[in-house]
Image (tube, rainbow, N blue to C red; front, side, top):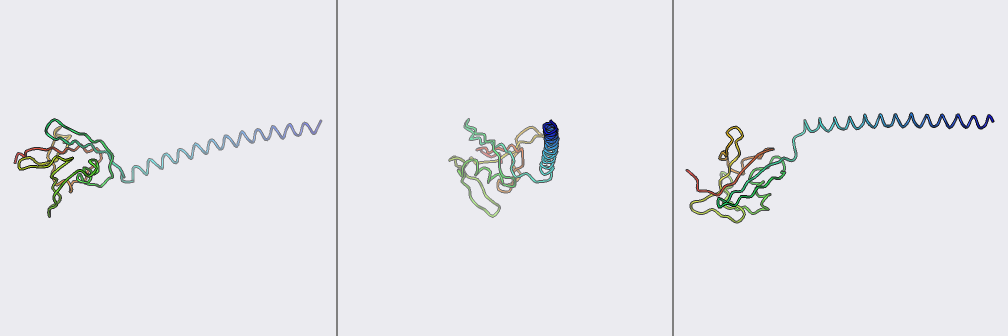
Length: 154
């Protein structure tokens, strides 16, 4: 009988040990996941964004409007973004001051109408003309931009 009793106590001890080790494993796993989550949040706060979200409207001024809501690499220009979303279907002329867009998606400028770019001014709640050339404007996260085929007012 003493042999059965000792195996019984050894079994109970092993069961208790397994329960304690399982609890400790769960506890430390929870701490590990919490630390990883905090680390990722901190990394997100201190690291520059690699990708940004930008909305681009291409307005052909004939009723056809195409919206592109895509992610882009941070640090690229409006010109590069336009080339990306249109799969390179942008024509342009190179000048000393930069690139001048002459056509988008097959719609080319003529003697009176040109491609002009605008940004959505949240403060004024309206479209505002781009302050620099498309190749000089670095897109920002959340930008809402537009290319419009139009006769300039100047």
